[in-house]
Image (cartoon, rainbow, N blue to C red):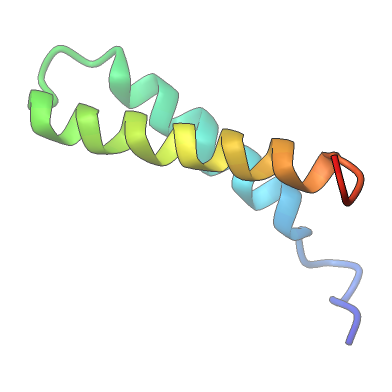
Amino acid sequence: MRAPDDEPVQQQIEALVTDEERRTLDDPNVPDDVKNEIRERLERFSASDLDQERPEGF
């Protein structure tokens, strides 16, 4: 099922969330444990994106 034209696509949503998370990492008021969780999440997404870009069998 295709999303309506006026709704953002998943990639756009993920880009916004990722951007916000990166800005949060620069905020000195955010606790270190929260920053660590954000870093881990960004690393998982990055690894997942690489896996999706690779052709099967490589």
